[in-house]
Image (cartoon, rainbow, N blue to C red; front, side):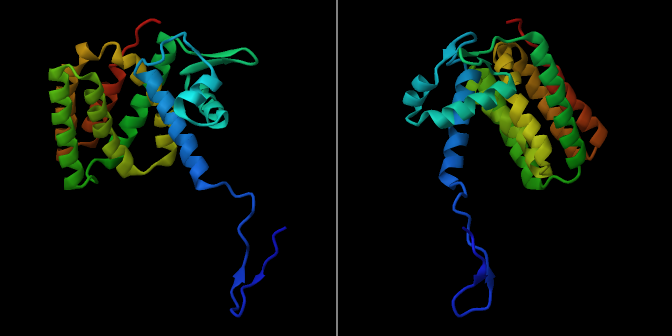
Length: 229
Protein backbone atom coordinates (compact mmCIF):
# COMPACT_ATOMS: atom_id res chain seq x y z
CA UNK A 1 0.00 0.00 0.00
CA UNK A 2 1.25 3.49 -0.84
CA UNK A 3 0.80 5.98 1.99
CA UNK A 4 1.66 9.62 1.40
CA UNK A 5 2.95 11.83 4.17
CA UNK A 6 5.75 14.06 5.38
CA UNK A 7 9.33 12.80 5.56
CA UNK A 8 10.67 12.61 9.13
CA UNK A 9 11.39 16.05 10.50
CA UNK A 10 10.85 17.87 7.20
CA UNK A 11 7.58 19.21 5.91
CA UNK A 12 7.99 17.98 2.35
CA UNK A 13 5.01 15.97 1.15
CA UNK A 14 6.30 12.64 -0.16
CA UNK A 15 4.77 9.84 -2.19
CA UNK A 16 6.58 6.48 -1.93
CA UNK A 17 7.85 4.90 -5.15
CA UNK A 18 5.35 2.18 -6.22
CA UNK A 19 6.53 -1.29 -5.36
CA UNK A 20 5.53 -2.43 -8.83
CA UNK A 21 7.78 0.09 -10.63
CA UNK A 22 9.80 -1.74 -13.33
CA UNK A 23 13.55 -1.86 -12.92
CA UNK A 24 15.70 -0.03 -15.44
CA UNK A 25 17.82 -3.14 -15.91
CA UNK A 26 14.87 -5.09 -17.30
CA UNK A 27 14.06 -2.35 -19.79
CA UNK A 28 17.65 -2.16 -20.96
CA UNK A 29 17.84 -5.95 -21.30
CA UNK A 30 14.60 -6.05 -23.28
CA UNK A 31 15.84 -3.40 -25.70
CA UNK A 32 19.23 -5.08 -26.07
CA UNK A 33 17.63 -8.45 -26.88
CA UNK A 34 15.40 -6.76 -29.45
CA UNK A 35 18.34 -5.01 -31.12
CA UNK A 36 20.45 -8.16 -31.26
CA UNK A 37 17.67 -10.24 -32.81
CA UNK A 38 16.75 -7.42 -35.21
CA UNK A 39 20.36 -7.06 -36.34
CA UNK A 40 20.73 -10.82 -36.78
CA UNK A 41 17.74 -10.81 -39.14
CA UNK A 42 18.85 -7.70 -41.03
CA UNK A 43 22.40 -8.98 -41.60
CA UNK A 44 21.21 -12.41 -42.70
CA UNK A 45 22.36 -14.41 -39.68
CA UNK A 46 18.77 -15.64 -39.55
CA UNK A 47 17.59 -16.29 -43.09
CA UNK A 48 14.09 -15.74 -44.51
CA UNK A 49 11.88 -18.69 -43.66
CA UNK A 50 14.07 -19.80 -40.75
CA UNK A 51 12.14 -20.87 -37.66
CA UNK A 52 12.93 -19.00 -34.45
CA UNK A 53 12.39 -20.85 -31.17
CA UNK A 54 12.31 -18.68 -28.08
CA UNK A 55 14.07 -21.29 -25.95
CA UNK A 56 16.97 -21.63 -28.37
CA UNK A 57 17.23 -17.86 -28.76
CA UNK A 58 17.23 -17.41 -25.00
CA UNK A 59 20.10 -19.88 -24.66
CA UNK A 60 21.99 -18.17 -27.49
CA UNK A 61 21.65 -14.75 -25.88
CA UNK A 62 22.03 -15.94 -22.30
CA UNK A 63 18.71 -14.52 -21.13
CA UNK A 64 15.31 -15.79 -20.04
CA UNK A 65 12.52 -16.44 -22.52
CA UNK A 66 10.50 -13.39 -21.47
CA UNK A 67 12.60 -10.66 -23.17
CA UNK A 68 12.96 -12.92 -26.23
CA UNK A 69 9.19 -13.28 -26.55
CA UNK A 70 8.75 -9.53 -26.13
CA UNK A 71 11.38 -8.90 -28.81
CA UNK A 72 9.67 -11.31 -31.22
CA UNK A 73 6.40 -9.43 -30.78
CA UNK A 74 8.14 -6.16 -31.69
CA UNK A 75 9.82 -7.80 -34.66
CA UNK A 76 6.44 -9.05 -35.80
CA UNK A 77 5.05 -5.50 -35.71
CA UNK A 78 7.98 -4.42 -37.89
CA UNK A 79 7.32 -7.18 -40.41
CA UNK A 80 10.62 -8.98 -39.81
CA UNK A 81 9.05 -12.14 -38.40
CA UNK A 82 5.77 -13.94 -38.85
CA UNK A 83 4.19 -15.54 -35.80
CA UNK A 84 1.58 -18.28 -36.01
CA UNK A 85 -0.12 -18.49 -32.57
CA UNK A 86 0.56 -21.79 -30.88
CA UNK A 87 2.73 -23.00 -33.73
CA UNK A 88 5.93 -21.20 -34.68
CA UNK A 89 7.68 -17.93 -35.42
CA UNK A 90 9.69 -17.63 -38.61
CA UNK A 91 11.78 -14.94 -40.26
CA UNK A 92 9.62 -13.27 -42.88
CA UNK A 93 10.45 -13.52 -46.56
CA UNK A 94 11.36 -10.28 -48.29
CA UNK A 95 8.06 -9.20 -49.71
CA UNK A 96 8.49 -6.55 -52.41
CA UNK A 97 5.22 -4.76 -51.66
CA UNK A 98 5.84 -4.64 -47.91
CA UNK A 99 9.30 -3.21 -48.48
CA UNK A 100 7.98 -0.62 -50.93
CA UNK A 101 5.34 0.45 -48.43
CA UNK A 102 7.92 0.75 -45.66
CA UNK A 103 10.36 2.52 -47.99
CA UNK A 104 7.77 5.17 -48.89
CA UNK A 105 7.10 5.89 -45.22
CA UNK A 106 10.81 5.99 -44.36
CA UNK A 107 11.50 8.35 -47.28
CA UNK A 108 8.75 10.69 -46.11
CA UNK A 109 10.11 10.75 -42.56
CA UNK A 110 13.64 11.63 -43.69
CA UNK A 111 12.25 14.25 -46.06
CA UNK A 112 10.41 15.86 -43.14
CA UNK A 113 13.44 15.77 -40.83
CA UNK A 114 15.72 17.34 -43.44
CA UNK A 115 13.23 20.05 -44.38
CA UNK A 116 12.73 20.99 -40.73
CA UNK A 117 16.44 21.01 -39.90
CA UNK A 118 17.80 22.88 -42.93
CA UNK A 119 19.44 26.01 -41.57
CA UNK A 120 19.26 24.71 -38.01
CA UNK A 121 22.04 22.11 -38.03
CA UNK A 122 25.25 23.16 -36.29
CA UNK A 123 28.67 23.33 -37.92
CA UNK A 124 29.56 20.21 -35.94
CA UNK A 125 26.48 18.41 -37.30
CA UNK A 126 27.50 19.26 -40.86
CA UNK A 127 31.08 18.12 -40.26
CA UNK A 128 29.88 14.83 -38.83
CA UNK A 129 27.70 14.27 -41.89
CA UNK A 130 30.69 14.89 -44.17
CA UNK A 131 32.84 12.53 -42.10
CA UNK A 132 30.15 9.84 -42.20
CA UNK A 133 29.92 10.15 -45.98
CA UNK A 134 33.70 9.82 -46.32
CA UNK A 135 33.60 6.62 -44.28
CA UNK A 136 30.62 5.48 -46.33
CA UNK A 137 32.51 6.01 -49.59
CA UNK A 138 35.58 4.21 -48.31
CA UNK A 139 33.49 1.26 -47.16
CA UNK A 140 31.68 1.05 -50.49
CA UNK A 141 35.00 1.09 -52.34
CA UNK A 142 36.28 -1.69 -50.09
CA UNK A 143 33.13 -3.76 -50.50
CA UNK A 144 32.43 -3.64 -46.75
CA UNK A 145 28.64 -3.59 -46.69
CA UNK A 146 28.34 -3.62 -42.89
CA UNK A 147 30.63 -0.60 -42.47
CA UNK A 148 28.90 1.20 -45.33
CA UNK A 149 25.45 0.73 -43.84
CA UNK A 150 26.69 1.81 -40.40
CA UNK A 151 28.11 5.01 -41.89
CA UNK A 152 24.94 5.56 -43.90
CA UNK A 153 22.82 5.19 -40.77
CA UNK A 154 25.09 7.63 -38.92
CA UNK A 155 24.77 10.24 -41.66
CA UNK A 156 20.99 10.13 -41.90
CA UNK A 157 20.53 9.92 -38.14
CA UNK A 158 22.12 13.36 -37.57
CA UNK A 159 19.22 15.54 -38.80
CA UNK A 160 16.71 13.09 -37.31
CA UNK A 161 18.35 13.25 -33.88
CA UNK A 162 18.70 17.03 -34.10
CA UNK A 163 14.99 17.40 -34.83
CA UNK A 164 14.05 15.39 -31.76
CA UNK A 165 10.62 14.31 -33.02
CA UNK A 166 9.93 11.14 -31.05
CA UNK A 167 6.99 10.09 -33.20
CA UNK A 168 9.14 10.31 -36.32
CA UNK A 169 11.94 8.37 -34.64
CA UNK A 170 9.48 5.64 -33.59
CA UNK A 171 8.34 5.18 -37.19
CA UNK A 172 11.95 4.92 -38.40
CA UNK A 173 12.79 2.42 -35.65
CA UNK A 174 9.83 0.25 -36.56
CA UNK A 175 10.11 0.16 -40.34
CA UNK A 176 13.74 1.06 -41.02
CA UNK A 177 15.09 -2.47 -40.42
CA UNK A 178 12.69 -3.96 -42.99
CA UNK A 179 14.06 -1.60 -45.63
CA UNK A 180 17.67 -2.15 -44.58
CA UNK A 181 17.36 -5.92 -44.91
CA UNK A 182 16.17 -5.60 -48.51
CA UNK A 183 18.76 -2.93 -49.25
CA UNK A 184 21.64 -5.24 -48.35
CA UNK A 185 20.77 -7.46 -51.31
CA UNK A 186 21.43 -4.69 -53.83
CA UNK A 187 23.78 -2.42 -51.94
CA UNK A 188 26.87 -3.13 -54.04
CA UNK A 189 25.04 -1.78 -57.09
CA UNK A 190 23.61 1.34 -55.41
CA UNK A 191 26.43 2.33 -53.04
CA UNK A 192 28.50 4.45 -55.40
CA UNK A 193 25.49 6.50 -56.49
CA UNK A 194 24.56 7.07 -52.85
CA UNK A 195 27.91 8.77 -52.16
CA UNK A 196 27.06 11.44 -54.74
CA UNK A 197 23.51 11.84 -53.42
CA UNK A 198 24.87 12.31 -49.91
CA UNK A 199 27.21 15.01 -51.18
CA UNK A 200 24.31 16.83 -52.81
CA UNK A 201 22.23 16.53 -49.65
CA UNK A 202 25.00 17.98 -47.50
CA UNK A 203 25.63 20.83 -49.96
CA UNK A 204 21.94 21.76 -50.04
CA UNK A 205 21.72 21.66 -46.25
CA UNK A 206 24.77 23.89 -46.01
CA UNK A 207 23.29 26.37 -48.52
CA UNK A 208 19.97 26.58 -46.67
CA UNK A 209 17.90 25.13 -49.53
CA UNK A 210 15.23 23.34 -47.49
CA UNK A 211 13.09 22.18 -50.40
CA UNK A 212 16.07 20.99 -52.43
CA UNK A 213 17.57 19.12 -49.46
CA UNK A 214 14.22 17.55 -48.59
CA UNK A 215 13.76 16.42 -52.18
CA UNK A 216 17.18 14.76 -52.28
CA UNK A 217 16.59 13.10 -48.90
CA UNK A 218 13.33 11.66 -50.19
CA UNK A 219 14.95 10.45 -53.41
CA UNK A 220 17.81 8.75 -51.53
CA UNK A 221 15.37 6.51 -49.69
CA UNK A 222 12.70 6.26 -52.35
CA UNK A 223 15.25 5.03 -54.89
CA UNK A 224 15.68 1.84 -52.88
CA UNK A 225 14.01 -1.15 -54.51
CA UNK A 226 13.10 -4.52 -53.08
CA UNK A 227 14.06 -7.90 -54.37
CA UNK A 228 11.25 -10.37 -54.65
CA UNK A 229 11.40 -12.81 -51.80
